[in-house]
Length: 128
Image (cartoon, rainbow, N blue to C red):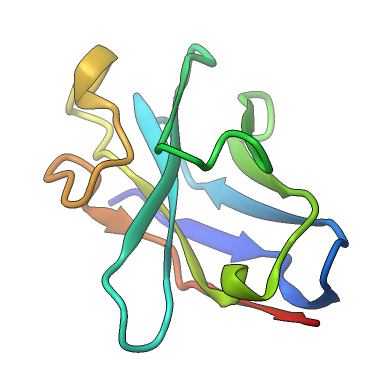
């Protein structure tokens, strides 16, 4: 089964930047980033296909950038001008390798039944 290992995160001041990484143990057609704050529903940020095609949730594209380095099996989330409301647990997710999840099926909407493999999560805390 595909394994996802996250790194990055931590504490940052408002207005700062942060990069999260997610290393996959193998190939996946579709990977994404989601976040979850205490007491709130999980929120999708962005998804990316192995080809590099991206889809962002509404309002996320202005400060978040998803990218992929297929030579390293790694998906990144660049976070810029972070704000206290960005404080949350951030998770990467992936579709199982045998599922061809492309196009409109590779989306950051919640839920996405195809993105059912999850990283361990990483906490991002933004202070004002």
